Image (spheres, rainbow, N blue to C red):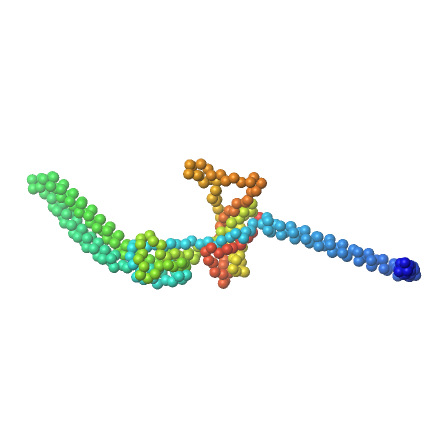
Length: 320
């Protein structure tokens, strides 16, 4: 009880002291208290005013703007397979080596094909001689009278001349084929590109049509961005695009080249009986399909190495 009375005494004393404060000092303290109460309110209002547009901008950037992390670097891969069979006697390239159009990649043993050319040349020469002789005989018979040579004999020699000419033409075709096969023993690069996943070895036997060397076309790189179908309305051909690879901080500049016109539809696949295979779905769950958008690369920053299959983030800037 004494403590209570003591506390009440202090409160009364403070009230008495406040009553003793002059009026001009009391009037100065009132605005100070008012300002101290307004400042937090102003800070709160300013924070809300900044948060609303920033939140809206972030929403547009991440939900409405056409961008995707589901992008892939693509390139054409040239599969080099020998058109003639034989043992590999030269292999002047190494894995991941840059080669230029026309560079030698591989040589198949040309011995048998060179011999075939010699044989075809000899056959062509013989066929030409036979054709010339048959043509001369046919001309001589054609100049004789019917008493010196019957009409049937003249027709026979004329037919023989035509057959000999055809044999000569066939021999010439065989010679051309033999020469082409000899040229095919030397396999050259059709593009500027990179040798990739080289498994062929010197001395291996190469069969016709068996892939021995694969080349990544260095002039064919592009980026496929797989955008949700809800974003396609904001994407048009020739729109600017920025591409950022996962392993690099530099930005690759490009533009929208085209938008795919079709993707695989699972429900369109027929079953063994030819009926449509329709998968059951929950009607309240509808996932947006992803559509490939082809990005043409306009500029690659120095130090950036494009590799087929790299992961990329793609952002498209629509032109109004």
